[in-house]
Image 1 (tube, rainbow, N blue to C red):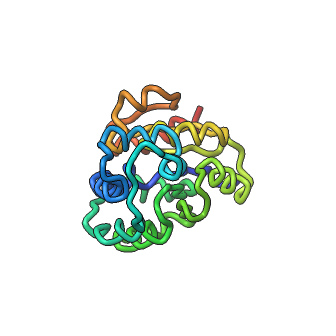
Image 2 (image 1 turned 135 degrees about the vertical axis):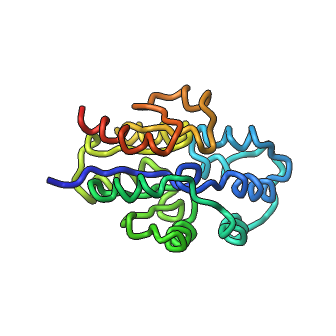
Length: 203
């Protein structure tokens, strides 16, 4: 039997990176507020960034700017859960960040081996496309897959691919934003991750 697939978002779930993402967004959109930036994650942040017209825009290389300080980004306390989950499930990362930067970060933390598939914005801008790619690659049904994310936009993209999500409240979106979308469950501590995933797949 094929292993079930858990798809992790990276920023806000694994990496405590909101401060850097917002700081870099302010270099690109000098007038952007924290709340407006979070609004962008109600949908697909890459599409939002490319289409926003009501903000002054600077010509910067966003990924290069992030890379300058990525070494300062800390890991949320999810390492034990990832190690445990990797024994029983196939793990992947689907992100709006750059694939190379995520891979380098995980290598630095000694965690890359747990994620055979890392699909950033450079693979495809839309997360539902990348989720479907993984389902097809491993011949999995929607019921055999689950998304773990911190934003309402990701929950919506997972739903477009036909899969459910677990929301985490320690990332980019606060509880009131996550409660606007349908998740299997919203969790508040990393230690809730493994039992919630096991409960989902045992239904």
